[in-house]
Length: 243
Image (cartoon, rainbow, N blue to C red):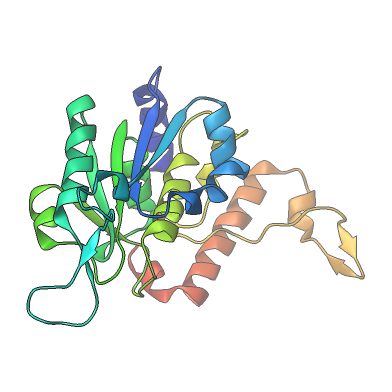
């Protein structure tokens, strides 16, 4: 299944660069995650562009406020509609976007299937929420997809956005040195990855399974599939039962 995805991905991305626009009140939070490792390599290879936009720059208030008290008298603050709307409208006036995504605990749970799908997009907007969330009218009129990275609450959407970006950028052809390494990632085909080993083959008497040293590719692949199924059944029964 994933091999077909990879072939389509390679075809779809010919001479096409992914652009990601992130709306946030803390753009500096992305400097670390996006300046190292796989995402840094993707940017250097010019297969992805990432732009952060400070929502405060679009506030029309004297103090550049982006939050206010909620109607109804509940505790906490809510991100205001105007600065977010102005920023999204400006970006959409400049290009077409495949999705306007809001990182939200209410959203669709991020999994490998969703990452595969989103990695095929050309242009996406990602909105990072804060406080008690965003004015619901933003969701009603601008957001096309809500995504959650888990059933828990973070202080803001920046960390979730960084996780989401990493999960899709690494799938773009040309980002990984060996594109086929993504074929054996956990959750591709709803299985966890099999155990992996490297040198030395014998450390303190702890030995690498002989089959991996045999050079017999057919038997190695069979062993890896057997171990992947075994590990998934033991550790993620729900994932195993989805087969």
